[in-house]
Image 1 (cartoon, rainbow, N blue to C red):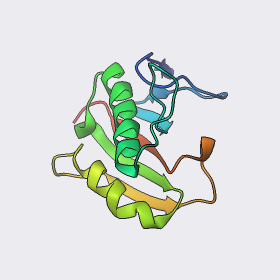
Image 2: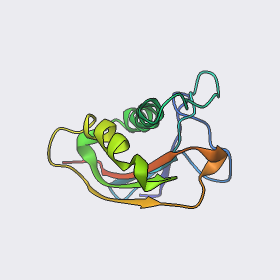
Image 3: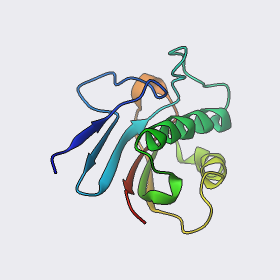
Image 4: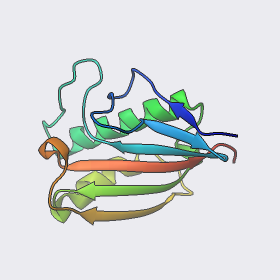
Length: 128
């Protein structure tokens, strides 16, 4: 089966040459999401908690469009502007999963798009 591009207006539109998500061979690859609010195009940067919730809502919208859920996520990558944010981001992230957590790495990077503090990408399976 060829790859299938997944797009939704309920997540931020790509700001470059990439797709929001791609389905291929039983996997769904979700591009890194930052805290853009799809309805307004504004960034949610009022707190690291609010920013992380918006990132997770954007990922949820892509999972919904792919007709899967956080239960299907097998791998995540979290990019932080500073590791001092780890505990707060982790606390929010944790609320979106119910046990059987995906594999994950969390890394601090020199910079993220639009000077945000957190970006998260995911890989999910279609069938559990």
